[in-house]
Amino acid sequence: MTDTSATDNSDIVARLEQVYAELNQESIAALDALYADQVSFVDPIHQVHGLSDLKAYFQNTIKNVQSCYFKFTDHALQGDNLFVAWQMLLRHPKLAKGEQVTLPGTSHFKLAEGKIIAQVDYYDAGAMVYEHIPVLGWAIRTVKDKVKSA
Image (cartoon, rainbow, N blue to C red; front, side, top):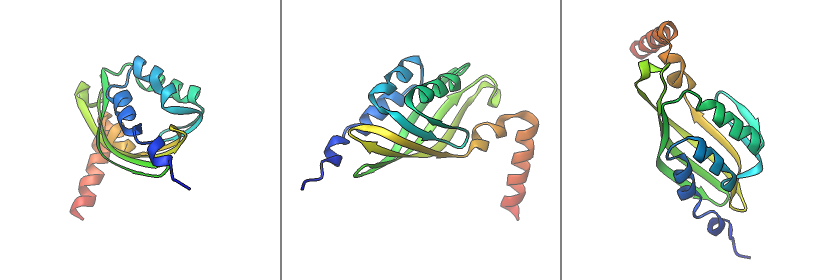
């Protein structure tokens, strides 16, 4: 028996890069071609089930965002498992005084029949949001600095 999963999934990284090159209304509409209807998505902030809920989550996430795009830095595809290392470059008026925030992360995708059936994202939610809130950010940076010097 021949393993065809690698063949079926061989272009998934290119398709992901194309959609996540800039997260906006058009790329969210294109998620239908990448994700299965019953997809499971988990990140440090949310957990959603189903493609319509995933699209709604992304729609809500990009509200008021000036720009959001992903650079894929590495990936590994083994059968129906795909691991991607990435950097999210985000600009939001309420984070970092509107300056661009770069957040590294990784994603584990579970694939079936050329579509994503599960995705788990790993990143530091504190680095993304909490450290850029004036008083809370100062407190988190102070704690981090004390841990580094201990």
